[in-house]
Amino acid sequence: MPKQTLSVLPQPFTIHSLDGDSAIPANVLQSPLFFLGKTEDELSIVIPSNVDVDSLDSDEGWRALELLGPLHLSMVGIMAQIGAVLAAVKVSIFVVSTFETDFFLVKDNKLADATKALKNAGYTVLEGK
Image 1 (cartoon, rainbow, N blue to C red):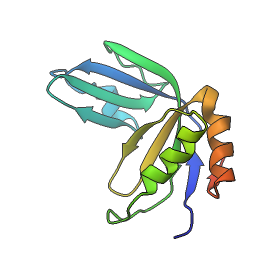
Image 2: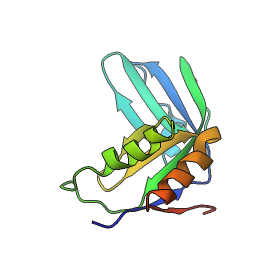
Image 3: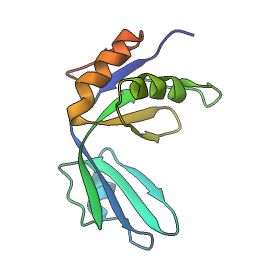
Image 4: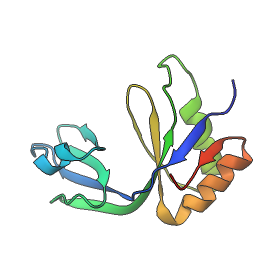
């Protein structure tokens, strides 16, 4: 199987943590791109940094590499292979997924290392979109 193509999204992202019983803020739902994860204890929101969220904790300065799809749910090992490339160059990731694709978030100060490593491993990385 040929290596996939990733696209660096132009905007920075922030990861927010809220109480598990918190409502999803209305401005989050109005954003063109956001990700939600919920357990009994926590509501996590990943959203472009220009969207204000009143959260218990947050981590700013993330950039997203979108794995261009659509990918089929039956495809095996894509996330593990990309994760291994990034782990080898000491780049931490925060991954969120949709039905058709995955997004690999890396800290902004590690974006150049991540894109270089992915290109060296045979992936196509589109920048400056």
